[in-house]
Length: 429
Image 1 (cartoon, rainbow, N blue to C red):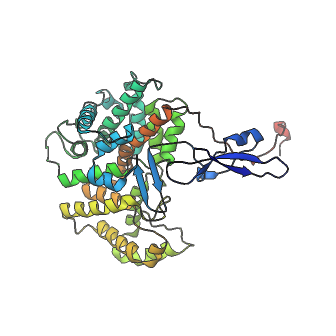
Image 2: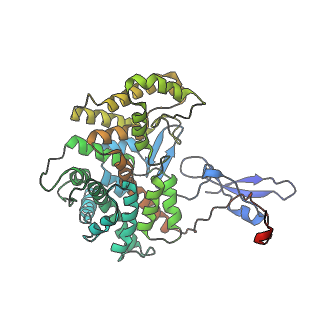
Image 3: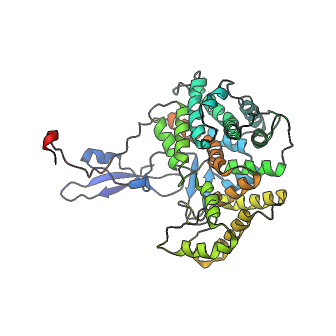
């Protein structure tokens, strides 16, 4: 793996040889760990040029618009697989056999209920609290309800915690929504699929159980698959960093949820709808397109382009097709916000300014439209993202703990005061 070397020349010092590591695919990586022996280290704000770990889970080629989970293209998983099969893949490294899948699905369904006392925990939150604030609290609190499997050095405990998190996140997400609405919380149903069950708990009530539309269930399943993992992003890195301290899995996932909440990360699809509200009407589009093109204007079109993908986001292609299916199923033609979104999409796909800069509609743009069409409030968008991403977070957490690791300890370039003495209060000016 380290058959090549790089040489670092530092003026006035002996050259430093650094191993060059080669992965399965992707660019080579210069191993700078030995730099600390020279009294120096690298400076990389945002860790844009730093590999913080070795992983076998997800690979992204942003220049060519490629996303692989355990080697499988995301487009194939979205077309030929389902969310729980993708969960099995991320957690275990291979797609399941028919028998393995049946067992895995059964195990997940047997863990979908949450401790009954957890319902009373919700009463401590205001009804108008942001759903992500409540999710941070209740997921972190799971360690107080399921403390029988918190030994992170026990592989069986890690497996149980992973299953519990994947199984219970839809239940918790729906409970957060029902609590905000003042409606009774719905128990999960094991006769439904993962996506159907989530929609059942979200939109049904004890007095009226409506059938779940297969088209909408399929759309939710696609959203879950396309958000399941995305390599070493801010929230996944947060989960790994928290896990490196030996924190329990529920605390680590709560940390990931907190990081995901940021508008620059998981809040992006929520920001799309906020942007559409700001634009207001199709008649205002030209004005806002001009603002987006003006370098001196702070306005940004949310949901277009991607920090990683310099080509088209491969997830967006799947989401666009799903979006069209949902809008057709629901017969939505007169919603002003959706009309506005469709017009923006048309411009982004044809305007040379957007094409030249690869500012194509991304997965957040389409998923925001789908969730709104289904009837999920904007404040719940990031909660659903957290639900889907939990399996990616816990897969990375398990991978880290299954091999030697060190507690995360980033360095800094200190530019503050040198050592100085305290003066008496009366002598300070």
